[in-house]
Length: 356
Image (cartoon, rainbow, N blue to C red; front, top):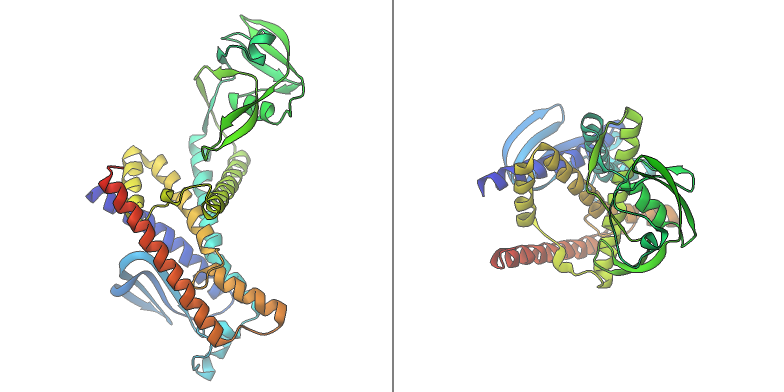
């Protein structure tokens, strides 16, 4: 448990620091005064003041905040502070300051993936057939276990992932393959067929297949800086899409909200990934960083996304949302977040009692 607690504090500390650093640097860039930069909430257990800003670590490590000058609309402001007041800045600058927090979470994920790919490369499955399933296009076309697929419709095949991608997007059109069998080239014509399969959400979907399984053999591929960056960006984009789709499915009810986890589950998983090694732990931080970035962009008052909605309304109507309405919406948003926190804690406790 102690191991998990330390891993949890490291994970949350990194994610919160990067998120708040985004807000802080953007605020400083646009010359907005920052009174407090805090990791955590509640009583301050460490604080140090440099210039105007008080940097502190607070007792409850479940978040953090950057307190900017003039951030609270309607609050009395010293006329001398108007030049560095958040509320007195142009709308686009305020929007960029708010959006910088989630953006830095996405940048962190890209950075972690880039470092991992640049220094460790990637492992891919070799394009070798391990098994041909009965009564499938592969069997009818004469493919055999041990065949190495070299090209499909003239496209070079480097990994089994290439095979899956091309076949899945074939729309059932006939494909010309060239395979290496016992050192000699063998041309094969094959037409993928549509069959039911389970997707990542365990939903039944139709997918084009030819009926082969890989041999399980893998190879290591080094990546140059450009390849590593491209893969880091594409993997982060893929995680963003997967997370958004998952949230949408939970809202629609097609994916159980029981999958949601809170601090206890994160602590357990952080401990497990830390034990599995630095690469797994770093990957876990990147995954959570993407999740944190997306969650903060939800259009819920209190979150960054809620503030961006207020700014959007101001951009369209030409006037800011009234203080009274803003206050009520923020209270509503806070209630939603409290309810969500209670729910995820409930899920965590159920997992503990169920041994999950």
